[in-house]
Length: 229
Image (cartoon, rainbow, N blue to C red; front, side, top):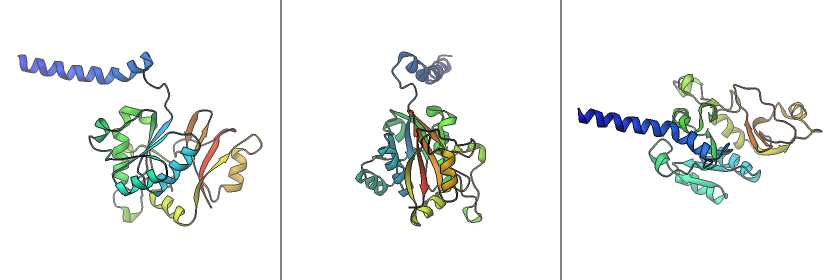
């Protein structure tokens, strides 16, 4: 009788603490109400260049990659980068999530991106975990099941291979200031054929371009795009 009772008490304690810790921290004012930092899974070329532009616009960005060469290059670029596997116990034991409010899974491995989004749902919420669209070409094999994916970033064609190819072809990630005189509509008329909208930063908030919602950055925000150099 005592053994299963102890087991139930332990399970109940862990569940109650897990479910109440985050709301209680917010109520006591010991956690950030609306952290806007971006946690990037991957420190590959695309992730580094995106993080560099975001860093210059004042956004907190932290990159995590199991490839130490990628991490070293990110650090040489002045970025906050950590070596580790986000799908391991490293997340619970060593990864600092202070200031981070969203996950962007930006690796070439579609399955790993999806698993990372699943892993961080409890931390950030299902609306704040994002990944690149999976490669659905015949050579890619079976893609992850759609319900298991995070929210898809940028556009249906914005796979890792497509973004990397654009960079290799000379495209750059740049910030464009939107104003009342130069609006999102003006930008679309000029650049819609060659630019991939990524996100917008303005008024203390970040708006990501995704496949599930219309993207309409307001005047006064910095529009981040992948565009011709």
